[in-house]
Amino acid sequence: MATVKIKGMSCAHCVGAVTEALQKIDGITGVQVSLEKGEAQYQESKPVPLEVIKNAVSKIGFEVV
Image (cartoon, rainbow, N blue to C red; front, side):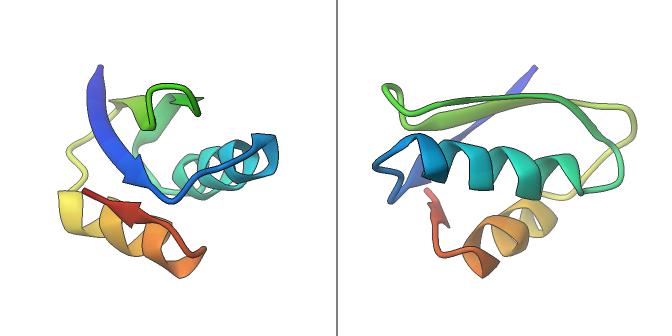
């Protein structure tokens, strides 16, 4: 499981948006987003560059820190 910190989430809708954005990335599975921890955990079925994850999250208004 890989973990990234997400900045800017404040509600369940935010969690859903981040979850959906990460699930759309080819090679990412098992996404779990925690509002309390401010992070997302996921598994990779193939290597996914961190830049791809950062771009997907920033497009919906959040930041990977």
